[in-house]
Length: 148
Length: 389
Image (tube, rainbow over all chains, first blue to last red; front, side, top):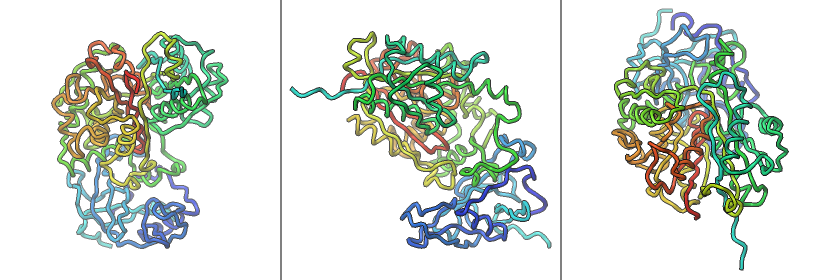
């Protein structure tokens, strides 16, 4: 991805004890989902207990960073002032491969909005928003890598 | 001889002035609606021993109680978003049936439209600073409220072949109903073509797939059938109610974006009322967006899952159609001040009393009010009837 996709004025997350691991992994460009140590159920967003068995024991499970578009929308009217000049952009729900059914809300970048379809294969691409914050976004799978 | 079970009834309903109230405060709207609903019931504030309302900060009902000069024995401020007032009515029914209260006043007031003008630049929320906790997993990626419903609409289109024209049919019917409501915010007739050529807000939802933004409110009065016997108007019976939730605000946590909590609350409410969806004469359904209605008619069991698009098309929701819906013009055209659930109750009661004029459903005996809150996160169904169960 060339340059910054969203502007610096975007809100930044406030991590808690239960969610810090997800943000720390993301900062290192590792995509993870929380997985229950007791029953193996995965979940996203991260939370304090397993929604399936209520165990508080959980680990961060690395996923390959590929997936398919479960659904998407092209946002054409920004309700966050920082994004007023950024529309249109694609918000997507990605069904993550190897995640035990977890989904992630993200964006599709490096693609024209009209090219995005439900079921389209995508792969993660990282955007560094600051020294401790990187956000996973997705591009159509098979997009040639940028020259380094 | 055994004592007869206490039965909850609605004995008064009212809407405030709407849709634009630049000279009123939020609490003024509560007061006006409460005054009118009590007058409709033939009661006074002195008869009220329970108060229920929902707003956007803690101790909200306490604030409204102070404003109205009430010192109630029963207080409820459950907030489930747009479905709040159906939940509050369900709770009020339990309260009067248990004897915890005799007369519960439920009020709603909002000046969302006027407030937007007074808070220039921040009306859309967000921007800078720390993202609010629970929705950070959506908002950081620029997802919007309309975007959430658009994600559901796109998935429904993919799975079931639902079309933009079918969604548009909901807006067209609501606008036709609004044309008979002198208070409605938007009254000029529109066509399917008008909807699908209006500006896209979040693909596939166009501007005319989205509700209006209004000022307004309403109120209703709940008591027992025994007490209602001495009152002026015919009581409307609370036959059954239920509510449910599937997730909070993150769409990644919604188990299936084509199935709303109505799939749980609907069957539970119908079972408690002892009826089937086929017995419902008219429905007042939360219509934040056109897709909200399509999902709701499926989940409440008025048609099979996936057939909602065909069900709402071709005047399916018009008076005389498959399910006369939102006979006041709904949130899509008449009034949507943020949490519209109270309007659904008011219109359902008016239908059962035969007070709906041009959009009256002939001989309406059973009406359903169903609220949807959050990001398709909560659903609350109330079944109302003209006759005692």
